Image (cartoon, rainbow, N blue to C red):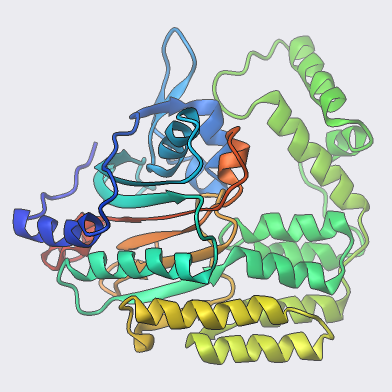
Amino acid sequence: MRLEPPVPAQVLAAIRAPFALLGAPFVDAPVMLPLGLMLDLAGETMRGRLFLVQGDGEDACLRPDFTIPIARAHIAEGRGDGRYLYEGKAFRVAPRGSDRAEEFLQIGIEVFGGDSGPEADAEVAGLAWRAAAAGGRDDLVLILGDVALFSAFIDAIGLAPALAARLKRAFARPGALAGELTRAQAAEPSARQGDRIAELLAGLPEADATAVLQDLWSIAGIQPVGGRSAGEIAHRLVQRGEAARAPRLSPAEARLIRDFIDLSGPPRAMLDAAAGLVRAGGLDLEADLEAWDRRLDAIIGHGAPEDRLIFHASFGRAFSYYDGFLFEVRSPALSDEAPVAGGGRYDSLPAHLGGAARGAVGCAVRPGRAWAQAGRAS
């Protein structure tokens, strides 16, 4: 397992300092997590980067980050609001051919409940910026995005529910949306493996679809080990079958969506451009865009220089549980796939884990990347 080079103690102390000022408790998090849970929540990009652990009991994996284990611990305690700091090792399989560290240090915060507005987002983003900058790099930029803004944009267009859901799922997979837009316009969607089963299952309740899939496995003598559950596979196949029956995307709708996701540059200019697209399309996103104006003011107020902010309307993160405001601190000395810090809002995650439906936001900093002398360390 490839390790990150050690960060000097004085640099590590400087990176910790902005977190320590918050006065929140530091908590431990389990290193091993249930594999099925992580496969359900990690997202397509992260699935292949989980370190799997198999034993006599439930299949497990090493934690790829801290959000899910801390959220589970918070819910188990039965608390409403909570702020938790953490520092420890996370583990991800390096992409083939890369020299990225597979065991690395993260320092971060997870916030549950409390204010869920733009100010709370800005506090966490500003914290990540200050901690990342403490590593000594002078070339950092703060990339901003918003899953919820894209979802609101799609909803405002008024697409068929199955088609809208299909585009939102594609947005969560980096690089997938352009291809999905093309397929959504095709008169007859191109055939894919599994389409026949998807069509057969599409008309069934998901519980029945899961039972059919399990029967097929039994007949074929298939014994799944790890990987996706029958319920998750059936859910995806039902969605695919329903999407195949959905109305097609019109050229005008596709052009409007492409113009939106192509927005990339200084945040205020990009949000003005988004407002122009909204007006031209006869849509109503005034409240969402006004919230972004407040969020930008607050981010700058928390220490991030305005000339280092970049808004990407197409920006998404590898973990699929993020469902709102997103950000990453990046350095041109590193690849875009190796952010110095990152985080955002994941309001729906606590409810998915069996907790109350309350706001949730957090961030993590990678000291091994923040340290200026680390060069191109990943």
